[in-house]
Length: 437
Ligand SMILES: *[C@@H]1O[C@H](CO)[C@@H](O)[C@H](O)[C@H]1NC(C)=O
Ligand SMILES: *[C@@H]1O[C@H](CO)[C@@H](O)[C@H](O)[C@H]1NC(C)=O
Ligand SMILES: *[C@@H]1O[C@H](CO)[C@@H](O)[C@H](O)[C@H]1NC(C)=O
Ligand SMILES: *[C@@H]1O[C@H](CO)[C@@H](O)[C@H](O)[C@H]1NC(C)=O
Image 1 (cartoon, rainbow, N blue to C red):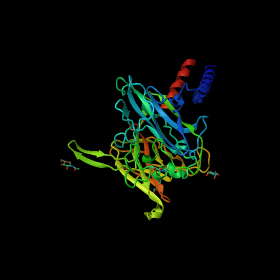
Image 2 (image 1 turned 90 degrees about the vertical axis):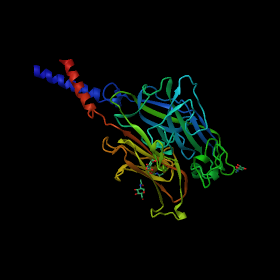
Image 3 (image 1 turned 90 degrees about the horizontal axis):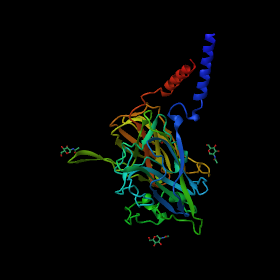
Image 4 (image 1 turned 180 degrees about the vertical axis):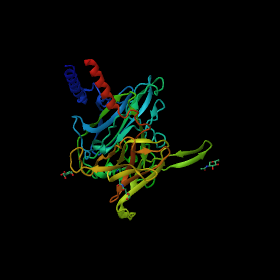
């Protein structure tokens, strides 16, 4: 009797376990992955005419609040009806999301302040962990044309910690700013040229502050600032259109089971200088963000076929375990690799191109970058390790304003409880048994 009933209780308990643990979407039991929250937000409206450029900074955007760990950030361009806008109509040059603290008494600052990065005295910008100079590439998230096809999720138990009340200075609150740089290429005489911001197509000879461009500067962000206009085909006319950045953020509430990751952005144009002043030697990064690729028909074959290979070597003052890696390149990009000091591959991120016309598969545009998700603990950057970033572009034609960035998420520690789910399961099992006895 007793044995039979025990067996029955046991199988009932197992059945219950399967029911309760087998449905992760129930959200009531199990690890952090079951408590993921998700929200979809729309940026303010961006208005574009055929050939026009918008480079907008919107402060205090909708964003998760409180002490949380961010798990992913996906974005794309949509029109007023919520339809996806393809890159050959509105080219998404980049979007960037950055963090800052603002005094509580200051009224929200919205709109365009004319600067690439926040540096108003009434804000404290909170940059990522490095490694470029000052405010350069200090964002938490950012991508360009590849945004629809690039994974951004952060695997459990890792996350980007934000909103920690112990870190926010007294009297301040945490806010977020988005920079959206979009180029409308409807009717453009040279769509590719417009997306690469060739100065001649924009008839631009001075930057947005009215200063003359550097001699020999052919194209890039200094020629496609807000309200500039790219050259259209003779007689082309088209309607003004409104677009939005639609972004989906996922997060979990902060708790001790979440392992924080640091954000690093490396730039292949970084030229490092060691200065030696009264304070002793120090490293000065000089990330220029953009560069030019000469056409190989101009005699620059370099023995690489028609591939332009650019490298930058920098020390990572503090390292850790790589949790995620992805490169950012522009059209013509092939892929990019980060190497360790001993030459091992830390992460390689390859560009994929569309082959159709629909949003997410636009021919000749980079519609995705492959990502690295090493088994946690398997790829480690040692403190002080000198890493080399390599960025490859096709040089079968010349390119202006291209980028070679590498975004890395690094955990300084590994989770203490590697078997978190297993241990929950067994303790839960015991609880059910206790209920029956
Ligand atoms: C280009 O700019 C110059 C002065 O900045 C102006 O005189 C000229 O008309 C512009 N050309 C076109 C095609 O807009
Ligand atoms: C830096 O300056 C100190 C004192 O002037 C000198 O002894 C040292 O060799 C310098 N180091 C480098 C790397 O130039
Ligand atoms: C970049 O080019 C170098 C030199 O040809 C090559 O060794 C490397 O594999 C290339 N990397 C990518 C990601 O294409
Ligand atoms: C695009 O590429 C995919 C996968 O390689 C292929 O199946 C498809 O037929 C291609 N489409 C066009 C329009 O070429």
